[in-house]
Image 1 (cartoon, rainbow, N blue to C red):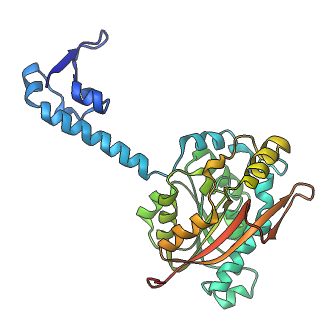
Image 2 (cartoon, rainbow, N blue to C red):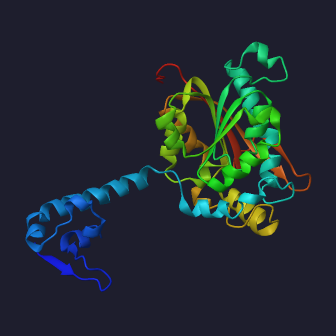
Image 3 (cartoon, one colour):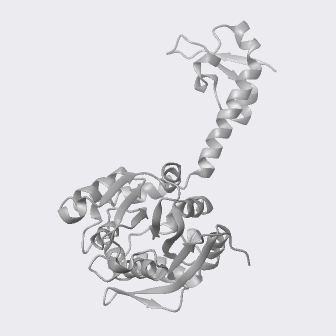
Length: 322
């Protein structure tokens, strides 16, 4: 194999490119660790094999990292532009804020029903007292704050620093909850490395349709929950009706959701979400359809799950076989 040497006009150091690696990985020698950078032509020829191996290793590592990450850079940019609008009552997230009328009872009643919430707490004003809940993709904290007011110890994670700053600033305005919420710039897969099987519940509301590698996302969410704990999802089904209502009408017609918020191809059919959760030893506790009325600006439960839906799953204590 031949080695080609190039000199850059603004650099005295020679950049050495392996023709094989350039063709297959695009890696230049200058991207390799310094220990592998040759100081002479003779040395370069002697470590030719090492260069190829290291370049291939770097390329493989980057590919593996990409395939295991749930963060989509394009989605980040969308929400970065909207980061200051989370708490605007008439703004771009008004529809999402209104969904709290369903999301909060979904989590509260679900944890009551599974028995993970103490009976004494459920009879009082803070039915989620002491329960550790993770809100994945928390944004500006729209869901974290009401859960904290019900007594939960909430951790909100979001990959956007801008969102986390907004969430911190807003929760600081209410001293009753500011000590009960922890906000972190993080992804769900990063949290698994730090706190596996730690939470009583994980909530991913209007998030799954915005991530990459959905299977990694769901698997990580399950791994974060204790046995007997719950997972709550709200998302959008992938049907012709969801395309018409969630994109054509909501985004382009009524403009109650920012244009470009959703990609129909990333919507998740309930059967797919159920299968992935069941493969991770979870039992599907509840599946409900949801409907938003743009006239009353209110959400309601419906039996039809062909557009928006909510799902509650419980992580089983023992391996479940059917």
